[in-house]
Image (cartoon, rainbow, N blue to C red; front, side, top):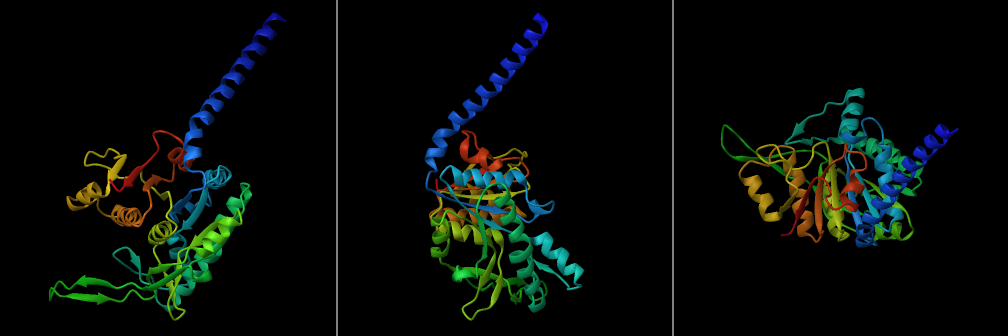
Length: 308
């Protein structure tokens, strides 16, 4: 009998220790919860992160952000899913500098995949976690007015710059944040597909990082969080750089430390901060609850880019 009492007492002590640990985490998070109360945080959720479906951790993080007084805005990509659908439909697909050449046949598939399948998967995932999300694209309410992207390549034979036609690939020309503010004021979480509309009603495929950065700037967001599949920006020894000023980031681009697929993310982060976002952070979306770690802990996660 005494042995059973000792076992039961030991179990109770372990349970109490876990509760105290949970309480300590909540208390430590309180200053950060207060800091972001009423602030907008734009989160870019990449298509690579969704290849196995919407992460339950991601959906829970977004719902908890909303419940703690943050106004999250989700912008998503969908490159792998678009490529898979184009392949199934036997529609040729090619890239120039990482941008998908999008002709008339491809743009219909792009819009279908982004605004249909992927957007609704994310909305459903957030709703299943207890949130109230609503899906839309940049075409809704003319939220993202776009123009055709012009890209030039150097001709190796003539050494002249020539214009490359990317088809219906665009860049944001104007963001109308009123639609987002209306949704946020209705206590809903907007989930945005990166499709823009031209001045004449054309449909444009836009890089999701670019849309996220433009939306964050237009909303004067407290944070732009770019989820990717690496830790963040690494130095030449492969170690994570936790914080960079805009000037430092540009120096790393110039000396080649930042290159390849990280460059467009850094450029998006710089443009967002210059547009009024207080900080942009590049995070490893593979880490469970990485959004909460970044926002509600002292050490944060990933690489933060700030004005100074």
